[in-house]
Image (cartoon, rainbow, N blue to C red; front, side):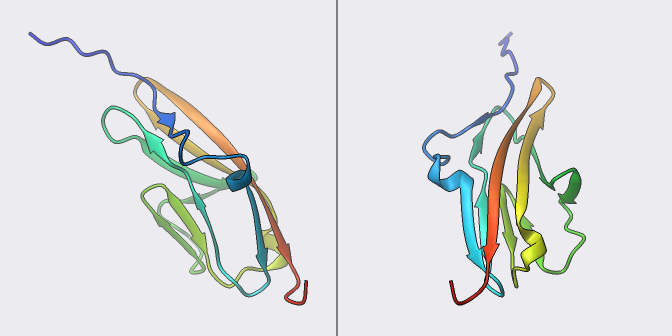
Length: 107
C-alpha cells in the first residue's frame, strides 16, 4: 500500500515576485492578478477584495476568474485596494496579498 501524506498548497516562487504583488492600472483598463500555486490534488483558489469574496464564481460582470487568475476589466478607482488570493486543500490554507492602485488615464 502506498502511503502519501497530503501537504498544504504552496505558491510557486517563480510566479510570485515582489513586483507582481503591486499592480498598477489606469481607469478603464483591465488588470490581472496571477496566483501561481502548486499542491497535491488541485487546491481550491478564492480571491478577496478586502474581506469581500470575489469568487469563484464571480458576482460582478467585470470580474473574470479562471483557475488561479483574477482579471478585472474596465477598472474603476474603487477597485484600488488590497486583494487576497487564498489557496486551500484538506491539509491547510495559504494566502497572499496583492496591492492594486487604479490611477487616472492621463498619469
